[in-house]
Amino acid sequence: MEGKPLKLSTKILAGLVLGIVAGALLNAFMPGQVKSIDHYVLSPIGQAFIRIIQFIVVPVVFTSLIIGLTSLQGTGKIGSYTIKLLPLYIITSAVALAIGMVTAYLLKPGTGVSIKEVGQGPDAQKGQSLVDWLVSIVPTNPFEALSTANLLQVIISAILIGVAMNLVKEKAQPFLALVKSVYSIVERILQIILKAAPIGVFALMASVIATQGFGVVNKLLMYILGLILALAIMGVIYYLILLMVGAKPNHFFKSFFPSFSLAFGTASSNAALPVAMDNAGDRYGMKREIASFALPFGTALKRDGAAILQGFNALFVAQFFDVPITASLIMAVFVSALLVSFSTAGVPGAGIIMMTTVLSAAGLPLEGIAIVAGVDRLTDGFRTALNVIGNVANAAVIDRWNK
Ligand code: ASP
Image (cartoon, rainbow, N blue to C red):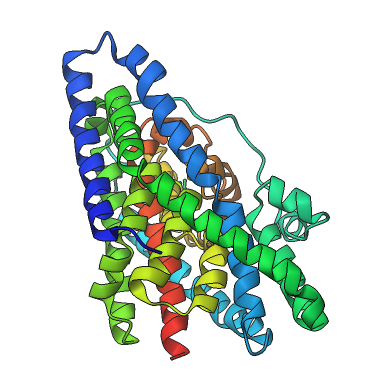
């Protein structure tokens, strides 16, 4: 893809910083007007941007996966990538989760917090069981998979279609030509949409800071800083993993910066996916067949930030309510948080909804969610950035192994 990627990342970064500054100024000097400015200007622009970038997620994933599959020597490769990716996902997510729990254990962000409630909890949602979830990823209707943007269903549909296309050979050519044509169009749409990214990110950041301000931060300072610290440690671990496998970490972080900054600004892994796929090919030089499969697959499943959030948060809640941290509590949190991290959606605020499952599994009070709800959006950007870093880094490791 063409364009000026470096300039774009600078612009997105400028949007982020200016958004934070504008939000802080609004919060400090125009407290009376913040609500209506946010309601009529900032939120609509930010939400519109998240919506329009999601417009291309499904077509990008569907078409690039089919193009990748039909260009392979053997479609068996998808199987081999899956077999390599899954254990890697589980190991790195377990490491992330352990870091989150150890950080919370050592920093004790939940002890001595004097507030009883700083925000509103989400509506209690019952978590899906693992078996139900596994069954639900099997598509019943390819058009439904596409229209509901269920990423795993889209991936499975595309693989099935791609494999069959390889089998029917020439008869699939007209459809392949169509898919390639759609891909080119969607690629161009992404370039157009990205022109609005700095404004979208500006509006999203300004909205968060203007409406939340920093007042609430003071009360849960250790919670926010501890969480960000754990996320940063995992980011460093990914740097070291990439260094170890010879995947050029500096080049990696530079190449994928636009997608990471977009993840931070939008707090949506799904929204960052088309940009991550673009960065993978254009800037990083990842093998196309790996990027076209591993990145959507990871966007559907891989969430290091969510794993850290759940582990850290559960211990915070235990500390806050003086629940003794026993070995069985740690096990319950570890297992449930690991599973939950794989089924957290790539949309803003998904992590907080999933807290219900982890806290229930560990027998911790659900009221804990209301305590942290007020600051969730402030850490969501950091979490999402790590979610995307982890997803892309695992793909880069596989890419390296295949070279
Ligand atoms: N917002 C995150 C994401 O899109 C999910 C979360 O809330 O942790 O990856």
